[in-house]
Image 1: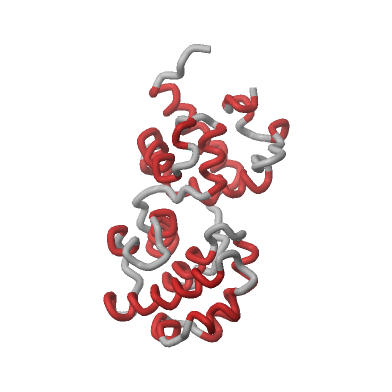
Image 2: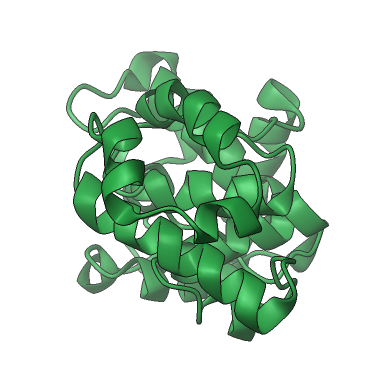
Length: 218
């Protein structure tokens, strides 16, 4: 099979986005995003945990500590009691408190709307920062590459196999081939596809709207 040119790959990537946009349209964020503070904490908690599990603990979490100021005064042990059903809950509880304290001390109680500042927050990496900027502030500075997006990008061969375990490199690959106007919806639409059809273990290629342009389905 001849090697795909960059132009052909770009055209195929755009077609992927167009088809998923027709299928799903704008997809609402799956986590609590009532405000940027709730969003950053929710995404922080979602690492290596399903959104559904996070959504079970956040109502009580934000009932008790609804603001950065309130959570900054909590102890990791108190937070742990509420989120102990989540994976790595002790580390996450520590990050919740430290993140809130830094938001209060360094940013006047407001979650920063800047990538460089966001990734300074404890427990916040580029993926989390991308979601906070996109959903919380309407700023599109990149593509949040979670497990679903990473898996689909590689099944579609839009990122080389050598980057399969490096989401940050996968993101850069996607940013290079997708025009900026498509970045906004990639994360949530690809998550929907990953949950419904392109699952990790048993992808339903026969039902996939991308099957005819996906090398892994051929």
